[in-house]
Picture 1 (tube, rainbow, N blue to C red):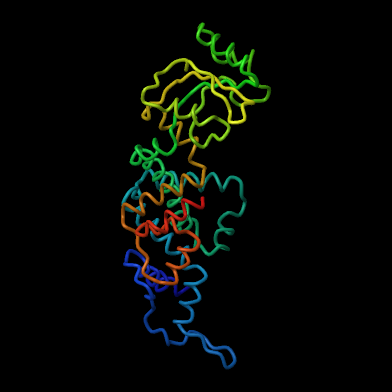
Picture 2 (cartoon, rainbow, N blue to C red):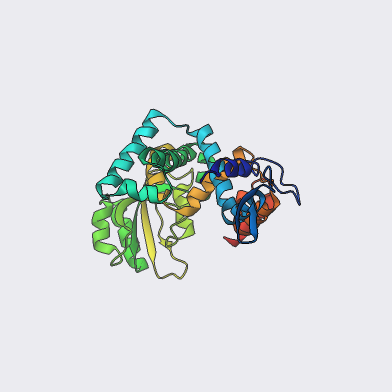
Length: 303
């Protein structure tokens, strides 16, 4: 535990520098002995290489995130209070929370709040900020709208449902008469995005189109296999109106939080210097190598 500071300092040398082929970061006094056992001696350099290979990539990404948090969502009294409130909530469900966090290597309650809970709150704040900062990108990628959709299992039922909507009946009343049994598209207003794989692409595109106005969409939409049919009432596709609900809908999806991180890594020109770390990220997380669009494109193609 005493070597945390120089380990972190060494890891810092892996960040924000040009990814030169063959370059590796090193630690000062690599030949200094740390321990011996029998006739075997371990040095600072050997320990550093072991730590770099076992936890280096995760440590590098954690440090990059901390830099982003400090720049985009720095710690405030509000963030500290939220982190402390979260700790108190956890404590209600555990009789020995402080003992448990000490067993994980944290000194005490405050150390855990500072190192774990505050960054977690910052991550939430960063995602909220991203939904504002990246509006254009999000609209293009997810084509969001708030809509009432009715799913039916015949085109005839869909046409009748559409006519009933045009006659002024409520979407939920119409759904009660014509919807497919068990469907979640039952006339209740919901956020729709490109991540809704059940819905026809044409329906999602129509709803998000700038030309589409609130009200009944005068069309029956078919699934690709022509076994399911959909009619819709557009509530809103104005981003400012639906942003909060859109975030609530998408925030737990790992691909969304990843896009958020990549966006800010790009903003701050994230670079990796050490070749070993670079190679690990290239194989496992090429999307984080934002100064190498060729590698990022290959990651997108495989996802």
